[in-house]
Image (cartoon, rainbow over all chains, first blue to last red):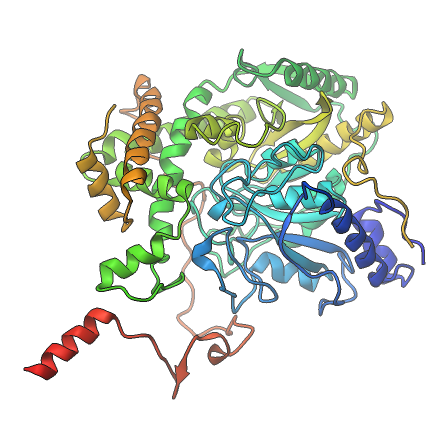
Length: 488
Length: 106
């Protein structure tokens, strides 16, 4: 049986359901791509655990029948260990599946493995994984972004057509932009967080990666929806997330915030994003200048709120409830400390920062103030969407993928990678990154943000732009990373 | 702003983190640098702004106080490190052993 390369998620599953595609051929295709990705002196190393041999126990029908899907290793599965990229969870295996994983399996998706990440999702490059970094398949001397770098790389390398990851401040969109794939962060509450290891609970959300907008949307349709096991999950119907009809952007208003095109923005990124805006206009959309005035305060706000919540959430890794328990502690305090010594430097830094901003004497000056500024940031978006804007377009990141080691010396320099993405998490709105061009051979991501639960709008606008870029020969070459030939 | 070693030690103790000497120095430096950037928030007047604690537009829903289906895919004794007569077996802390020994001796 011949398996044409880069079939879409919907094509693959339709082929499997009609018995025209053998799931074993799909797995062989994935094995070949994995072998190419991990060949040579600089392997991509997207996975922490992978099984592309056994057929799996998922259903043979459903909207994702036979589709191989990678899962970020902070989302629990019973089939594989869950490490969160940390030594502290070495050997841990969950006795239950995350709701998102369960839904993928019920839809026929084949969970092929767990992908690398910055420890507990804290980082923007995967350099903070305890198990070594993942490399960007587009340029192996550069980071894939993070924290869901492994999931983005697995899709970019052609190993899987789609993957799931998680976002707290941009951990799906930023690696999607760096690796030249599509990433969607849904509205807070759209996807159940049950089984997602908590980092910052008021910000965390499971997201999806795909080679195309439609691939990502097809997976999001499956994992979205109310879940009684997560009290913050929204009880709202999930719309079909289908691509736009041709010319369907007539009447759509796209907001362009000046604060997302600052002087520090890489010239090449700015040019590519301006060109994408002209394409949206050419498709019939109306461009409108808008302002999100609290944007300069977003990074400090995020890096107070997220570490504060992390310092509380990660208290459970104490060697009693969770975490390896090294032997020989003289008392309970030493036992906690021996376990928590297994945290890496960035996790310790954020726990310390979070503990500091929550401590007596500093709570009002830092944490309470950040919560108030968060309301201003959310209010900025509410005002723009209330004025008739359907979606906002910005660059996803201020630069293309950076080199290893370039930002690990100064933690705040690394935090600035998230400058355009944290706002959507703080406001709880949906956002999407799609490849809109390249600079020096490196992909550039364009970001679309919409009002709460308007994922349909994001998919509609993004797929129209994606189609227009492809028609102009400007779409990223899906085989550029792995040079995938037709397989048999 | 500078952070004293005493402040770093106090925070580490609250966080149950034992930092080595090199880690303490680096932590003091990094935290001070990060907190300097946080001063950006001081330029906004937020006295009349209500804190935003989350983005959910609904309160946590009540549910019937009834046992639900067990979400575990495997029985508990399948993944517990040690299990005996329906109970988890946990290792005894060295300190408790020492206390027990002291009690025996007296």
